[in-house]
Length: 196
Image (cartoon, rainbow, N blue to C red; front, side, top):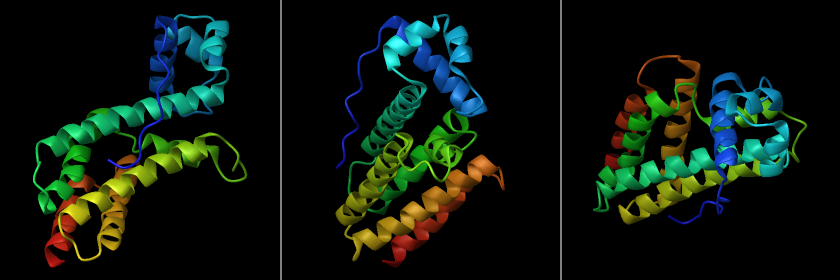
């Protein structure tokens, strides 16, 4: 798809343990609730190792988001490979990917949205913000590309509608407002795509 994920720096075994521990802790407890001492202890490394590998907690948070995003993109690519022909079903494959990803990987909603919300207003220079924007722009571009391939009259507007349904569903997952939000979003996405 159009926008590439940043080149992920190869990790040493200690760096991998730090990232794995941080990823679990950040997603389950929140970024602010988890200190570097807790991460280092969970990873079985020293704080020095953590800082040597990542430089700062902020850089570790960005790495956490980038690695989750890379896994999500691989999952999306695999789902799209199952529907190789352009058309509405290929657009809907993004929702199918979200359905199969969500329960195991995102029971608390989107890690990027959660990170953005947790950092909060007044921190516009925080390195999490451009990372979250990059991820969301990528998905919008994927939707637009798929809608164009499917022959939609206005691929951009249709992609924006798909993105709203997708984002609403992932927030609903995190809020546990009702069950199966991605299945519901997929149903409405299918209805919109057939009206075009």
